[in-house]
Image (cartoon, rainbow, N blue to C red; front, side, top):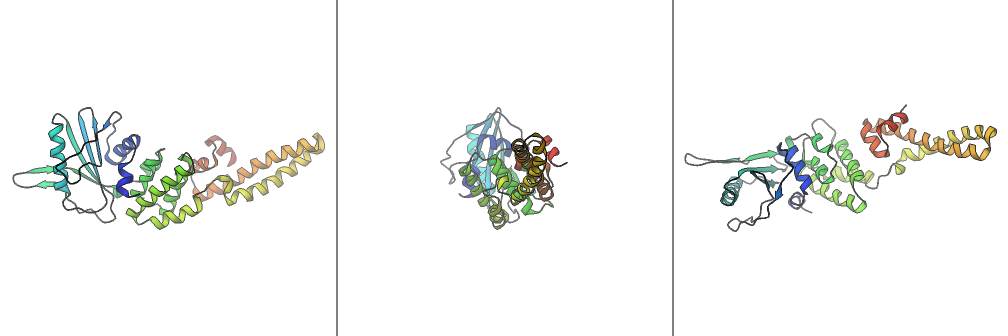
Length: 282
């Protein structure tokens, strides 16, 4: 699955997030325009949408193309010929490894034309890490990690993808997308390394779970037996098992908070709300 294919196949909901977080446009009501331009080698634009009095055109670019201004100008003229009554906004989202050297227009004594180039590496990744849509979340890999450890960011992305995916096949699809996009940041090996530990993550599979369960059951059953002397061995042991489960989760919660230092992330992994997590961390 190539980068262009991934980015061209994003959903309408994801386009809203892309427009909002990459471009700064908040648009709810729009429609995709499926138009072929016979006079241009690349007959179709990557993204072309219409919203009220606006036409928004987006091209994704993974390498420096010095003919980009000409290509964008040709698209502009074709779009303008069909939608003269609309304001036309054009953007190139640059996702390449190298520094962007492309010009953002054509400027001569007799002709001036301009569009906007956005280098995704200048966009803070936190904007996408907070979005609860897997297709949008994978785009965080293209953004600026700032002073964050890449392994930690990627681990966070993988954990959230795991919990936002419908099933294992859905999860694998997003992993493939993430791997392909990560090549733009030279992070494919880091992604694969983190995948090894998290691809089949369930909180029950965490090493700390088994340790926590063992400790929790021991403590719980001991308390249960003591209570069982007074209220009946069977009820006491059952009570102990329940308490053991609680203590096990408590043990795991405290280990996870030391690992991630993020309550929201830990609550997400354990599948509990923040109030329950606060009780577990006491």
